[in-house]
Image (cartoon, rainbow, N blue to C red; front, side):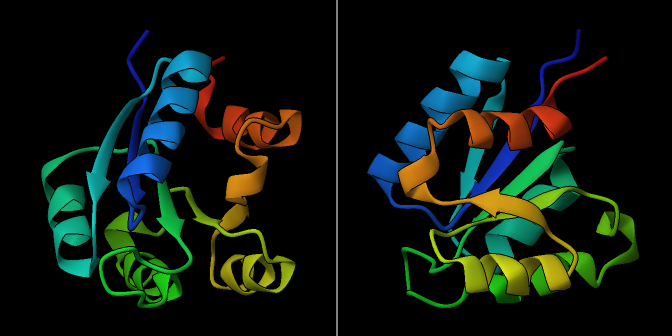
Length: 126
């Protein structure tokens, strides 16, 4: 089985560690971290990912993660790439879904069965 690869965009160190630990323990996934638009697009060009997780507010400059979602989804080569927004706010989830994201999850729900099920729909093979 191929190891799943997840790109984690815009999370602070502690949150990235929690996300990485959860994805590794539940799915055996390798998690790569980026901070903003430029390094995210660079990582997407150089690697293949099964899922992109984007923080609603980027840790490095507090800009809106929706902008990165829109940039990814605007490129034909990434239009089918699963992307989820990480936010505890339903209205921001709805905004992300309306722009092509899958329903994501909030940091408060990171270890919930519902979050695991959302991730499993993308990361589990077969």
